[in-house]
Length: 451
Image (tube, rainbow, N blue to C red):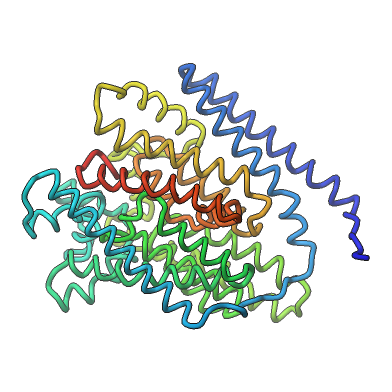
């Protein structure tokens, strides 16, 4: 008969205590926001739903987190998979990229009734792509044209990756798209290998397939930092799990050099360190802590560039505030003001309604619903990463790019894979995601305020 281990009383008390304290803090933050802002009734309802889903997910996460740090390290499993599966994942990822690329071009042709290479490629220079490409060609500037000066808010990891190909081909757009075209299949392959450390082949492949299906996949094709950032994050986590600590640190540092959210990699890396290496010798524990310590170096390099260019290491924060109206706020406040804007633009501005506010809210509540339902099944290190990532990425005071930020958070695809463990669930989810992806792609091609 299988022996069931009885949970320790200390852990039984600690988990509810942490959950109650966290809930009280969030409720106090919600009450403060409510009193200070006097939001509308729809805004209050949206904020309450966002906060409630977040709290439910966190409650389900806490016991697993405590058990994760208390239990011994789990054995890695990578056996029992089809031959050449990584090559298959890579080829299918390239096929997805081609579908997304030509899907955008087809939508342009249908909309305009004519096709030209110039207009077909121009669409990929919109969004933040042009900023990255300007930095690739001319680096950062200061005190000149305002539009170029504020580009200091865009981190240099992606432009530096493009630069050698730009010099080779003398075309910034093609160089950027080539980097993204290589980085995305590579990220999918590393994603599969990372998941195979814990999951059987079918579950790991299912998660990768959800990454292909998520609305907004065209961002991975565009000359933007999403593909490279995702690749660096996954490589860092995979190397940490495989005990290649210096390399894990280098990849993590480059993620933080590519996107400021890369700094949050210290969370899953520290969780893995606390779980896997607590019983090792002092030397091994110090060595395994290297990735956690090295990741911030990438962002420190970006601060140094800020200082060299502008004389202020935190100049990017000024530009974020003055040019984009961005400050750190509460994620539930984002749900409130975006709901108000969705209602205001209903029937009045189709582009803002369908291209901006509706996709932002669908991603917001979709991701939180998945987290509330599946946080208990998600590896605690990844769940903790999602919690902080969502709170910071979505909790900005003027969020336009919520879908793009959440698309680069692999925990969303992981959650879908865990929750859709039956064939009917998988196909039902795919049947929902594919139309949403097509509609969002069309909104992007028509330039309906998709950012």
